Length: 356
Image (cartoon, rainbow, N blue to C red):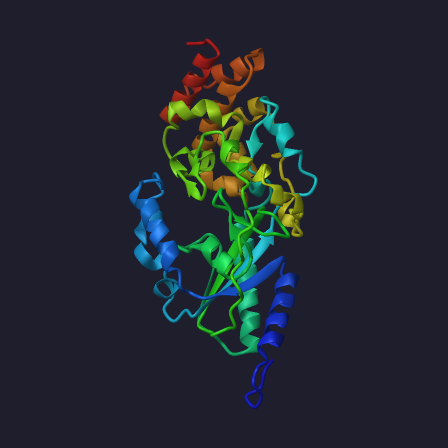
């Protein structure tokens, strides 16, 4: 703790803060300013083009997303923190994608939901900072408020925004969560990260639905993560075939990124695989009752999806699977499902197998 008679050494404070962050499970932290004018311009263009689809919350908060001091008055700095999530021991991602009897779940969602864990750790880090300097006005965020987290993480030196629009770190690839502490402390700034994609464009053709329409330009309306998670209603028929067996999110653009050879396994046990979701059989998932979904998915990021969208996604994957007795039987069992959403996608899947 500092004393009134001594001036805090910024580097010493920074080192102590980084050490405490490591104890709390963060792989790295950085400090950014609050000037995001260029990012605000690009966000405005993206919204004006309608590429956010039904994610109306992206526009709802106006400039608060790109102006931290409007979201939390008095904010002078943003502490950006990275927490690695790649689940050690999970079934090989490409092997699952290559087996159409299995469902593919984005690797960030194989363990427990990260939101609460991240917020708790960020709050502990903010409290520790108060002991080092002074009590400070602050709030913590972990994908829980209108925050331009990737732009802030870039400015904090944690990585650069790749052509697929995800953040990439030279020493860790892109399999990590980001969280922020907005504070009124005038902390020393870190240098923004430089970009290192070079001429590589591997992520662009890797997108199954062509959602990366140009380098650094994502049309969320075509993105499988949007279609299987954010979209509440019917998945456009022209995109269903390209979804393959991806039932929650998509990692394809990251799986081909050369920088992910440096990706690190998650240190926190909460990110270990639960309920065999790294290689689940589609016909078994489709047979889950709503109470089974509630019991097994509670505490998972998937729980936020809800039972009906979960079944919708699995129906699409079954429609894309090889025709077989087990697949047909699973779909026939829900032909008359009481949910119009589930029923529509099930009938589409049956039609794919010649069962009108």
